[in-house]
Image (cartoon, rainbow, N blue to C red):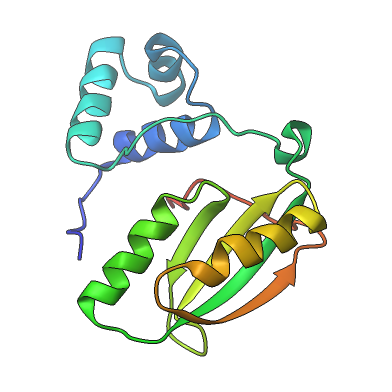
Length: 157
């Protein structure tokens, strides 16, 4: 487990602002959180070094790049040995259509989020890739009709 890092109020405000808009300059960020630029920059670097800030990325509208279908997939493995789990997880990590993978309790061992252009492409992906992932014995697919909420930030209250 990761060790919790205690953050003071200015660091929390920095994180909230970065989650809202990571493209702002350090000067803009410092003004918004009530610090001068240098201490703000140092706090950002400290949080990056500690792994609190893992990176920065752009939010891409998947439909605008032709990925119109999102599928939530429940997958079960035949074995749960460390080696079997690692093989499966490595294969998932190397599969670009799988944009999220969660190891879970309950009926499914894993819940995957898959994005593809359409239903025909998903059918091909299902037969050519998902069914062939190491150790997979059962797959259940649910087509996403609408994303009601898709937050990428975490609550910092």
